[in-house]
Image (cartoon, rainbow, N blue to C red; front, side):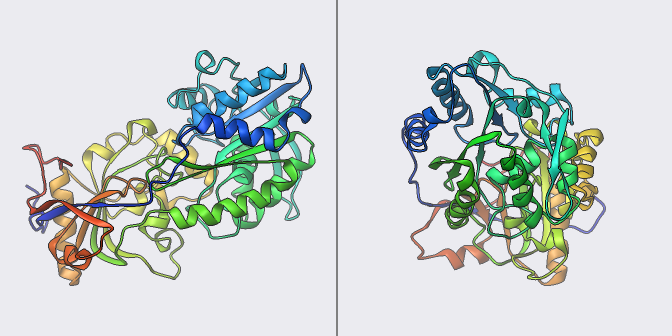
Length: 416
């Protein structure tokens, strides 16, 4: 065991939180209905080449949604194809971006349409603050573009428009150069204004946005003509904010996060969950989680450990997977470097949590919660002192009473 000051991992209970489960049963049917509502047939002519965007996030039903859009275009005798729209993700290479969307089931074979992946862009103008706006060359050369993306809270700023269709245009379709350009200024202003520049080219024919519930099931699909994309982003963000799951405590001694990853959040961990102040160093300093421990990185991240710097303690197994090239490219593009710094590193899960727990005890800040990641908050482990605060609330169900945290002989913490 480590020579550093540590305390045994405290006993915990496994708790389930019951969020709203309302969702769309027939997602493909809802997509077809929305496309008909906004008059897809009147916006596309036979023979036109139409690009459909595919992002890098783990969006529920994304392959089904994109295939449905492609199929509807083919019914109109259009020629759809898919372009990865993910800024610098995938190691800022065409092959890496194609590989990323393939992990979500978006392949030429599955979609029945070509995938054209390139980092080449066309500069289409400047937004009012002077930021250069780039557009994926393949999308620019198409007769039209349908922008597809999830609408949700951004992990870096608060504004009426955050992460959604405007971001998919400004940053996703901007590829590495465009993403870097937009990140050089004020995202809250530059993202929607860069999107207006792209819409002004006449290339964007539709946006198709989705909102997910706390269980990551599609609960809303909203298609919008180009002139209503900003309005759709704003309206859907209100719903997404209301549905965003959170850890149910404003202050903790220790938050243990089993995994970070690009498929979880663009920042590896969602700062809306762990505290925006950890990114901005500015108030409000809530929620206040005095020590954060991260145990691992998802396989889907391929070594991109962006967000690791938001932790206080990590494990050797996480650091051993750190791919500097992928992580640093992401950091350079976003023009933020705090999230790639390697924190205090311990050899095992048990040691990392034990040192963090001892540190929190010295601060006089008890209370530990362990979550799978910042996207999956339906179940969590919690110490007895915090469990008492949840008693009597019908949203919470104790699945396993207070007892030792599950672990193996190698010092890995287990979930079950």
